[in-house]
Image (cartoon, rainbow, N blue to C red; front, top):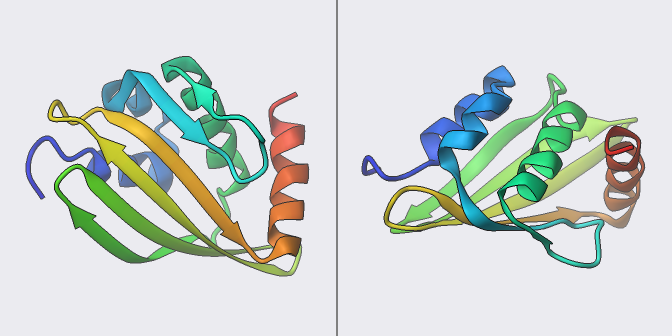
Amino acid sequence: MNESNPIKIWHEVVENGEIAKLDKILDEDCIFYSPVVFSPQKGKEATKKYLSAAAVVFADESFKYTKELISSGLACLEFELVLNEININGIDIISWNKDGKITEFKVMIRPLKAVEIIHKFMGEELK
């Protein structure tokens, strides 16, 4: 990984709940694609809001990244966790610019029951 790759810092955010580090790695024009919200969330503040809520919802000891594919400006991180006895499998697709700032963060989750529980928990966290 080169120095402009934000994935190392993203892992610190996830592992240690260091939400403040998002300011270092999110581009002002970042777009967040949620598995439970119809429209893309545009801008650094909106993305930070959703990622902060997700950090709370996913802050479970069962959460772990299981696979990573990282290339120049793009990462695909597969994760697993168990919430309310539901096995959740998902992927974070993260794109960043030459300055190491995340420009797009897309989350995909399966199965349907997992999407439903994440929708419920994220809704509670975003109130």
